[in-house]
Length: 175
Length: 317
Image (cartoon, rainbow over all chains, first blue to last red):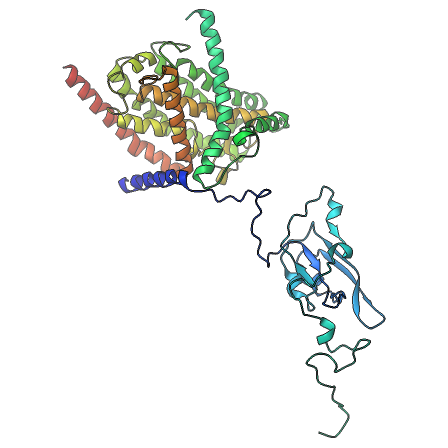
């Protein structure tokens, strides 16, 4: 009993000492909190160093998305590149989990340290491709999917990608 | 004081108490913020004091809904009871040598009676809401009442014994040589704990315990009726602090400053201490509260009573 009472008194004393400690609060609108570069906020679609859009519309992000907030339609350009005909993210559903970023094979979809995306109208929370697309490369500056992939497109045949050997003639008998 | 003077002073006290309770809602949050290393409401007006006005507006414009399954009459009566009882309690508080509404020779008993009536409000609210959480809150309130009301009354008997009167003014006058917080330290300790339980303040807010009972007895209340409960709670806090000041800390007595200022300063310091208790101490289980009341506080109070009686008798002897 006595021990418990002393413990209570010590608690009161400790709390009283906190009169002189500084508040931990970050006064948000005036004082911005530090957001790490890898903070998971608003989603963007990036472009590769040549200025072409990175997204190849593989649908992996839409599959990985736990709340099904990503919708897109795949199309093929004349040079053989794949691209999304539309790309739509419903941010009123998005939980900013970053699964889409992890699933993306071309580093196209990326999360940014920005969370200030309030809207008065709920329909404005649906972002189309033109709202998502940015002009930069995001977190990966040198990566260009079509330069490392084996897929043949106009101007780059099989075997011409970086670190790629010429294709083997599988029907030849020579070593 | 003349009849008219008394009435107008009474009205002033009512306004001051209600206004004080309103400001206290903001002040408590700021103070809790300081002790929990944050700011609390600091946006509206200087130091955020206009938060009170904003809260008031919100509560006044809220839908004041009576659930169809509730016992309508009692449901509406309950929140008024606590405010009326607490405000009546202020009648016997002497704010200065001549500043009081009522000086009756049973002042202390009147105060105890009024605070006990306030418990009915909680009980009735719990019953009338016809809601399981509210009922559990009312039940706990009843359990709490039987465990603290006994030693609450007894803890003050030491003071009465030393003074030889139930009149609040006589009690203050008797403290000219020494405040009762020294000879009645046990009484002060027990009365303070009973007072916290009486006003349902945080270490003993079992009837509303948000974490277990959503909001306890006022689960079904909204709008102004809910505001009445909050008002009653804060009025209770101020009343208990006024009482502790009067009974144990010499009321208006003090050098240099005018008596009313001394009284207000003491009450203010006590309110800060009560908020500190809220910031520091966790809530006990309600069987723990009951066993504390019956097994520790009651014997302690009786011991205090016995010692005070013996010493008073020996000194007078």
